[in-house]
Length: 362
Image (cartoon, rainbow, N blue to C red):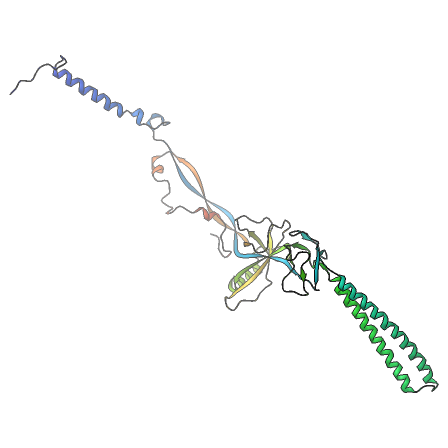
């Protein structure tokens, strides 16, 4: 066996060199496992940091129950403006999309031909009135002569008949004058109701005909406005029972109070009332159309919008889960943040009102 050297290449004994290497390795090991570095910041004395856990608190409160009904808005009044005489449109006297009053001028149709017809009818009336005057005087003279047997009774009867015919001609001519005046007035196309007018389908210079199929413009009254909702007949009966027994909140007139949710999810500021006006059940679907009325002073609601009407029921006591954040200092609650008595975390949706007015409180 070869003999080991007693000295290293550096001139130090082999045992001393081995001891130095072991000491360096131990120093690095102890520095890596130092408690000061493994201890979390902000936890003095080596205590574990308190973990933030989620907890819930069960508190009683009053929840308003509602029944949600989907529907669409409908104009309170709707009028399609059509001409009642034939002619050329001379002017348009309104701004599209503006509010107009009842009786306000919308279009002017050329009145020349109708003015001439009126003048002709007045002339005919004057002629018949003159003929009636002659027939009346003649009948009066023949009546006196027949009293003294100066003329025959047959001649007197003929003059009386001629007088009545002349009076009938006057009546017919008077009616013709009124008809001509009506046609002349209809050349002024006016608004039948007050409301907001849409776009114009005709322009000045266009030919329109009496009672044509296409409307010249459409006029709608938007304040108040209707909301038509469709429900089954069984749902209607249930709502009627709840309205009768006082479950649904009512206004002073006895109508159910209704809130409105718009298409973007926001709540309409003004409340409406539910009207059970259209109570004819559709035999094919078994559904019925209900109508609610809402004030619309700012014209925020427009016809055709999809909305959801919420019928408000009476408030009932109900417990509601409320979540909050709280620190726990013990490791046991940190490892088990939820109590073993609760098997599942409640949904925050339980804090919202129930969707059906038939839901009962806890």
